[in-house]
Image: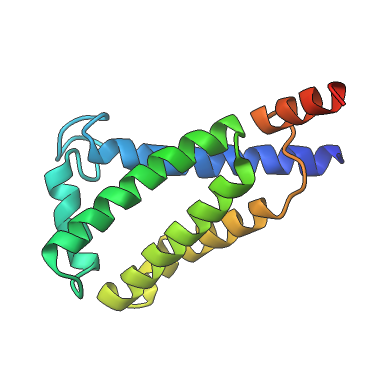
Length: 151
């Protein structure tokens, strides 16, 4: 693998992974309480209110389930991308998740909102990451090397 591509995919994996973990953990209050410095939500209650605003077109219970699924997805995809484990599937999942988020933002707040927060860009970057054939410095690479040794 070309060193430039290897470094680019590592940077993309780490930046996307961290970008999913940080807000996911914020919703669980890991970084501190609502109103704290650099805290967007600080707890589930404040995030849930925002999620219901984005999914105003859904019944309350269904929107809450989707908010839980989205948070679990962000935490799972973030961890998998950072580790480089099942990277292709984590990248596809994160691409679909952020595309849904961007579309919900556009419907509820207008198209400028997801563009201002680069949500479509994150989705596109995730789709691009899913097309890379090898993930250098990853669990996927280690597993592939072990499989080739045992052939």
